[in-house]
Length: 419
Image (cartoon, rainbow, N blue to C red):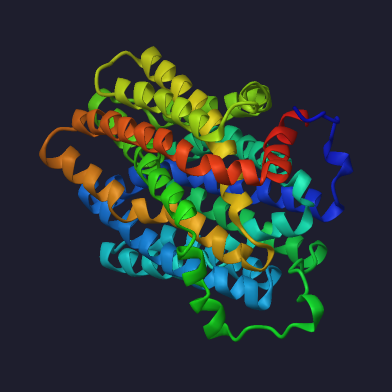
């Protein structure tokens, strides 16, 4: 067992502290809007969940290609300019989304924002690894996760209130948060891309993009992402299908749904480090399996319960699973990435979220509109069970690799508990 030294945010570089603040501001705008996005589309355009699923698929297709290009550009040209570009585009796009009243134009705008707005996503994740030494990276991701969930605690509460007044205020607030974040990045955060070693020349942009084949050759990493993608299909229903399902089936208001998601985020803020401390000594894939058990129970409950207090209990169960799965999964993904390929590895990690969005919400919408809304949650339980089996099998596959990297990976995973 490694000895543990008390580490605090004050010991981190000032640039990382600013990045943490910028992340909080940017995500605050996102969580004002995103939990109510599906509900907005159904009410604004008078369509069902099938059309909502198609919009999510278009957005995700753009995110995939945008992330693919952005990861390569981050390794080629650096992180800062791509982050700035993505923030400005997404802020402007939020305003346009709130103004559009034609569904076909909304489709086109969604495709554009998915492609251009996600260029800076891999760059932001790579910047964390650039700024922190390896023995603090997992802890650093944990600190960013707390900032993320603080915004997720506050955002849905105010978003639910604003949604009852005017959805346009949600789009404006999201745009303002993006612009403020861009100003902070421009004024304070420098470029963090590591210089080439030993005078090695920069790869051409085409060679950088072709370099994704080296990531794809990492078969263990690809297996991990594939299993995680199944889990994401289940998890994404929380911020897409669930609001519409509860509203249509039980007249569960947008304000109540905002409180539901805020409870989720507040639990993460209060208990994340304590839970991680308890599980850090165990094999990561076993803990990923254990965490998915809570997804199976929590998401499955929505197919069987109808009382409002049980909706909150189900969300609490889901949140426990999230607090187990997310920090371990992110640390595992980060540990795979070589220094000169961080942008591309983090882009591939983003694909395990973006690719399920291509069809996950669309299929859920088709099920809700044509078979029965409860079946979304029955299937979520089945997929959770499949994910559990996948993570359990990955334990044997990854065990040798994790043992080989014991002095680096295990220290990264355990150090997060000492914040």
